[in-house]
Length: 306
Image (cartoon, rainbow, N blue to C red; front, top):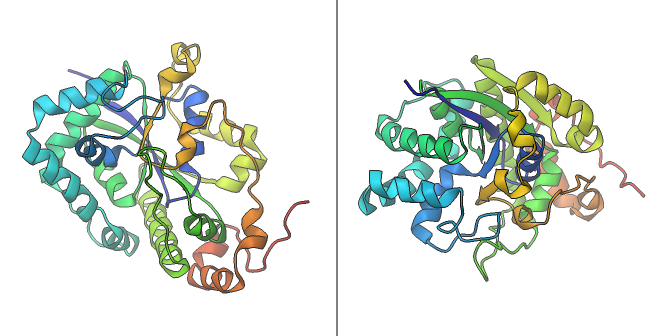
């Protein structure tokens, strides 16, 4: 009998720093950074996505075999249905249902294809853990319920004002020439921050392996956070540490920073502290209360570092 697929799932919201975090996990030998795995079927159908290793998904030594395997398991109609179905099923409303403690549906229609996808990822990674930064708590709950998946949930949180500022910036996608990253209004982003993090925290309290990490702590005290991760996550394969850097960085979808040269340096992002408008600051601060305070983020605008 084949052993379960080990999945390290990064939960949170868009622009919480999951791309940097996944790269850090991979560079420390915890597994292969696969990016937002839930978006695989969208990337497969689009046909023009680049992996963070620099080549197209079809030519990638990691994702190429996965795509070929899934084409054997599923037909075009099934792949198209999964692209739409996963996004609509595990949306904000589903995250809200989890956050208030409603029953989580098993979504049996997704079990066979998702098991096949993660099995293919396990083969492509030579059995190493898969670092999945899909972030959505609904998809995390689904994976957590699968008996063939050995699941670790890392909940990455970031100051909501920083997230709002990042979501309003104009950024090129880089995965597709000429495509831009989607932007969001402060109110929408703040509501998603609240429901997404509330749902992720609820999953942690429902049992299973759960660790919450503050992005700010990750940047300011990286060594301590890595030590906490080593105590929490599955023991890293010593062979992974000596692999070429490109062997364990294969992120599809996500922040454009995944295309930057490695190793990346984590740095304090202070621009949002002064550049975010007073209106957006007030919206983000009020909408995300009291969860914001629970995570240690105050109401006052902090001073930007010199």
